[in-house]
Every structure is written in C-alpha cells, then in structure tokens.
Amino acid sequence: MPRGDGTWPPGGGGTGTGRGNKGGRGKGAGRMGGTRPGAGPGGDCICSNCGTTVPHQVGTPCNQIICPKCGTSMVRK
Image 1 (cartoon, one colour):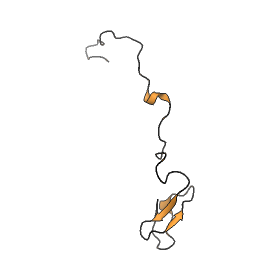
Image 2 (tube, helix red, strand yellow):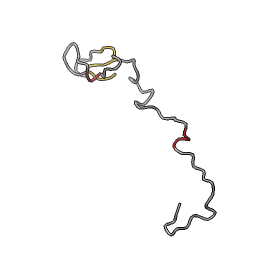
Image 3 (cartoon, helix red, strand yellow):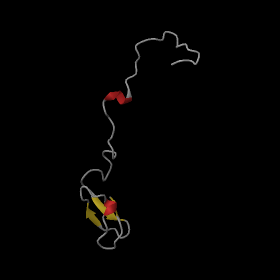
Image 4 (cartoon, helix red, strand yellow):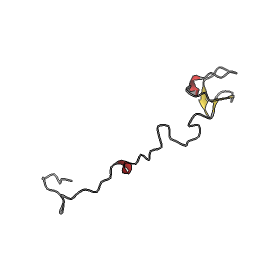
C-alpha cells in the first residue's frame, strides 16, 4: 500500500497474498438467511391479531394473505 509519497513498504513488489472475498468459495447464507425459522417453501402464516394459522403458499408472501377470521394481513411464522 502506498504511503502517500509514492513509495511502497520495504520488501514490497511481491506476489500478493490476498484471496478475495471469503476465499472465492461462496459461503454466504443466501438471500433470505438460509436456515432461519420460516425460510423456504414450508412453514405457516399467522395472524398477528387473532392468532389464526394457515399453511404458507409457495410464491405468495404471507403479508399478502388476509386472515380468514378477522381480515388482518398475516405474517410469516
């Protein structure tokens, strides 16, 4: 790394030892956090008002499902 005066650290000019982000092996947990409860196609949607639960429908977010008992938007359990 330059010191601001155009010189490099003593012994510089080597081959470099950086391996990039996480070694370049893709160890991230994924877009939605991987193994957290409620992630994936299974699970339930629950009404935050009355507690009614319905099975989660793949492709439909729980907050777009209306509770069949009280009409409130559901949340992912």
